[in-house]
Image (cartoon, rainbow, N blue to C red; front, side):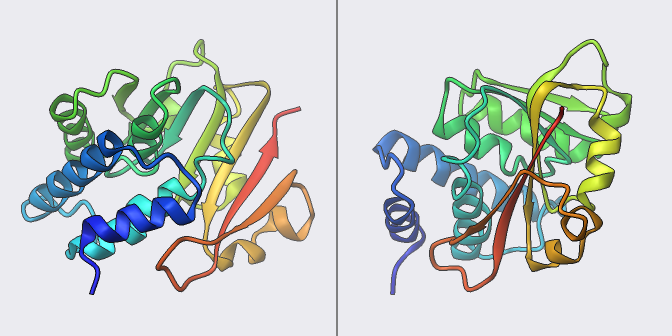
Length: 206
């Protein structure tokens, strides 16, 4: 029976990503902080460290090779997923995390302090209230509402020719944007150790 660290190491290997001890160590500490805070604040429904590693960490890492842009906004980041994971994996990326829930923003700030993450900014507000002078190369959302709503809320803060990414379950296929074929790409994602249909949809701001 694999433990949480072994699952993480094997999963990163299966994804073909860099499995340096520094990244593994920081992701495991992140998992521990999340489980600790979760006892007091309901940040995630998952309570077991192995399911956190699979459903949160490996799920977030599964799109790392597909999101190439460097200045990224993670909308409704919640517990920092996928933004903090992407920032830990690639320190060259500048990730902004936005969430309307104060305790979630506080948690994400604490993670950044404890792990000394320099390439993350945390904003506590509704995404539609963000400063429109700042434009992002890419906007990503995981477990957010339908893509057309994400686009409506963020079209003022994405660069021309920037990209929207949505991390989705198989319910994606029922969305209006998919039925109308108004997307650039859809990737079916294989998350190690997870028996579930996962997708990444990509749209371009033209």
